[in-house]
Image (tube, rainbow, N blue to C red; front, side):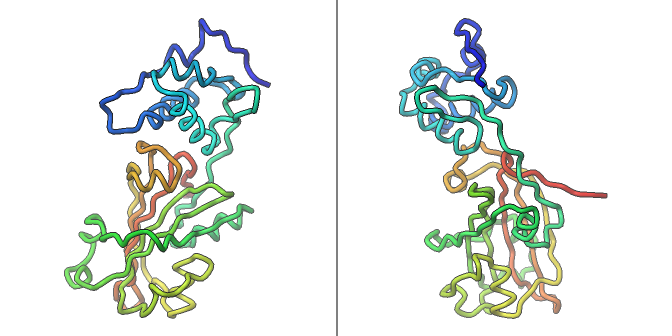
Length: 259
């Protein structure tokens, strides 16, 4: 059931932050960010947002811009758009829970919880150089080894939640660039196709912000908070296998650990 809106005391009108035309962030993303902040802090489930016309007046943007912002909020589960009725604050699903046992394949953990999972190998993405944050964790010899870049988009219950970029030592994986990843999984492909499995993996967790391309792939705003996991994996004989950068969308994933 929606909550009645009283225009003179509408929290959206009271707390909205006008679009900053000087900001590099697109207008729709600014509106989406501001409404998301209000939903997180002020607006209860079922609250009816102002109409598209009213929102366009509040933020000083076109209705097309408002529709784009509301579309992003709907995709993230923040709002529910009802034909002929309006837009309402949704009862958002809980974020998916990611265990700190980072060496266990993420899909195995989510599947065990009864959630549908999928990894999409983004073959058409241009090859990207290994970030300095990873390179500085390597020895000079390891850093000099030629590596193959692969990118995958991670989806749980039909929502994109993360992206992994991997740089695999190319001499260990001949013709990998021409192969189809087994079930979209690089780890399975390395193990079943090449007999390669990491014996050790150093993981580093930090908070970061999405790049423009990551925001596009995750259907998120440029300022969306991310958990960033940097990983360096070695074989049992000490040779470098791969380095990875995985980002998890903070609004859709939470981390869990037990003492």
